[in-house]
Image (cartoon, rainbow, N blue to C red; front, top):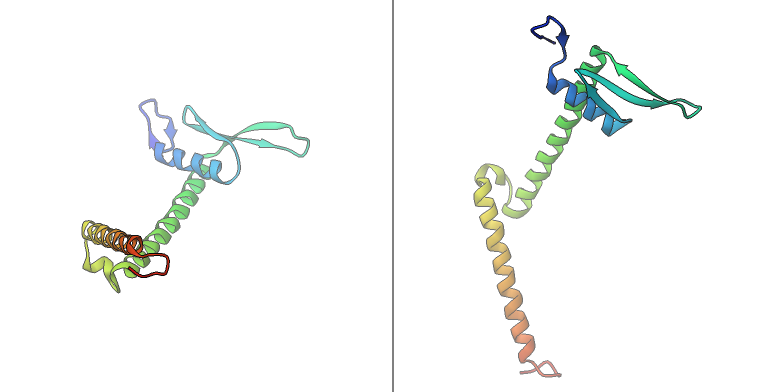
Length: 132
């Protein structure tokens, strides 16, 4: 919470945005209006209500959003490590900078293209019986 010039306590803007993102990704339409967060909910009779979310719930949902994204970032890091290992071998992320890794991948691609072109040229020289 931060205090504005008028003395009204308000959620930190980032926390409000994170809570809104969490609601949108997990359950319902959400929006901010003058520092307050609202969600749209529907009851069993299909009546739609706009509900204002309390500050503690905003903090909780912002924490949920951050936690979910941290797990996602960790998964992406693990996948990146696996890619490095598959391309340049064990402990690749520690042995190559990102730029060096990309250069290595592009060199592999160029070598593959040259091999394909050479293979294609040999096929073009062969007659129907597979002989030159």
